Every structure is written in structure tokens, then in C-alpha cells.
Length: 193
Image (cartoon, rainbow, N blue to C red; front, side, top):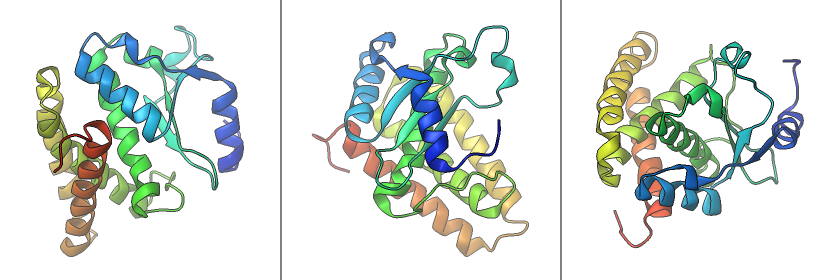
């Protein structure tokens, strides 16, 4: 893709996607959580431009972004998920935790260069948030994803600790916990953490 400003990317994906329909989830808890995220966190948009023959060209399962003065958008590469509800729900939670950066003041704009330390720390934050929110949501179908996420987070921590001080890594793990608490209150406002 040609290099675009954040606003141009937002417009590009908004124009080439449609509103995601949470009714595609058979699991009521997943459906309700996706609906809460749509109404309180970000637009949830599903791709319209990938075709089964070209979807493998994309390495992304989803993206989230928020230009200044715009509501965040979560773009979902639906075909890439191949009908796997758990994987799709995992992507929605992952991207919603990225969007929490706006609401919790972690970033004005999400880092998008995946070779930078700031990007890797944001991913550590999100991975830590997923590790916390899965048990809080108590969705049986997501138990395997929860276990995999803990392995992913631990690998990420091990890699980051080689060049980032332990205290900084710890701060970003804690930011992930805060993001999980915030997202949980969005998804289940009747239950306080």
C-alpha cells in the first residue's frame, strides 16, 4: 500500500468496508461483547476488498486506528479468519485494547512501525491485557486462546527484556492490566473490577 497519513488510511478503510455484524457470533457472550465494543469503543468494520484468492497477501487479521477528532475504527479482515469465531473474537479484543490507548491516554496515535520499541511495548500492553481479560470474561470457548496468549506474552517479555529495562516492561504489563479493566467495564458495565 502507498504511504498514507493516518486520516487517509482511516478514510480508505472506512470507504472499503462495511459495518461488522456481531450476530455472526453463535456465542451470546461474544456477540454481546462485540456489540458493546461497537457502541462504546470503536466502529467495527469488515473488509469488502479482499477476495479469497488475494487474502493471503495481507499479514493482518485486523487494524485499529484513530485520527485526531475521529472515533476509533477497528478494521477486520474477515476472510483471513476463515470462519473461526474464536480467532475473530480474539482480534476484536486485541484491537479494542489498542483503542484503549486513546481513552486511557497511552498514545495520541498508535505506533505503526512494527520494528520500533514503542510498537513492541504497545503489543506487550495488549498481550498482557488479553491475558487478564480472558479469565474475567469467563467465555469457555476462549480458554485455548487465553493459554496461547500467555505463551505469546511471555515470549514477548523475554525478547523485550534483552534491550528494554525490566521496569519499563513492567510498566507496560501494568498498562495492559489497566486496559483490560477498562475494556471489561465497557463489555460488562454491571460488574465492577
